Length: 376
Image 1 (cartoon, rainbow, N blue to C red):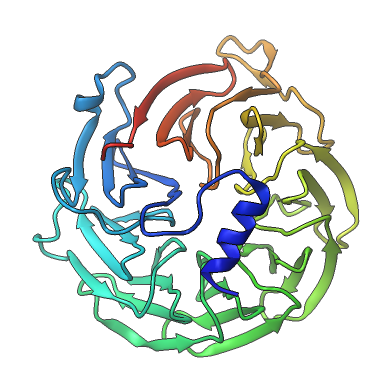
Image 2: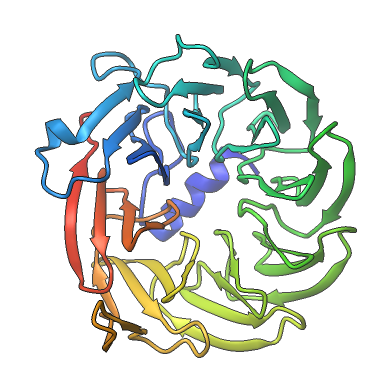
């Protein structure tokens, strides 16, 4: 296993770059009117997300490091925003707390701390801790204010690319050592571990007492979130690369085989499947108006809008006048997509492998703005 695994997958699919110090597929996070995202040049960028019509030079609020400075390697994981700061891990093996207003690490509560290997997954902030896994096989809990270790790094048997998931007092994550782990946030004590037949890259989805997580053994597992006991498993046609989504009734999981599977959350029985005709490597996004799924195809990234109850296209919604409309079933974005989709106030944000961040109105099919990060 290891970095060669991802490189091999990408070569096999022919749809993107390998994991290197010059890559990256960060998701976006929004906070206080700004959008924060990692560029493929290894910079943490802050963009104006409120103004629709802006020249690119004015949309960029700041870059960390600055545009003129060398980048952090690559940023693959989605940053986290909390308490006026942005937290991000980078391929150079370091975790950063950056002031959100100016993009510096000089203000109170900002810092940088090393891990023992490249950071591929995203960071999560919870209970005053910054939680993140590293390619050194260790899971770190850092004090949010100082960056100092809150407890000794937790050792696993292989690289950790999974972004952690927090539910209550427990943090859940997977490792390429074929295990899912649950640790207490307060002291790092292991609550349970689950052994599978393949590594875990996807993040767990924890809903109503169950942890749903897909593995590279082609299986999606439902685990008891308190004990780690397997409740059920479902076998797909290929790897489950991305985090699933769940509304408590159904679990929605994209697969590298091109299908999105909807499974009964209690039994694991298949309710429906939808063929996107391209690998699904970004997590499905469950919104109040429907399920949004992205797939990589030879003609570009397609976004599909599905009814989560039956998997049918063209999800109905109500416009501002209360009239029922239908959203477009899909449209192209361009490039490949690995980053999670993000939606806020009816705007969908997509960070593609074509170095472009796009803000879309998914219901009208309108591209509100786009921003190229290729030179950042």
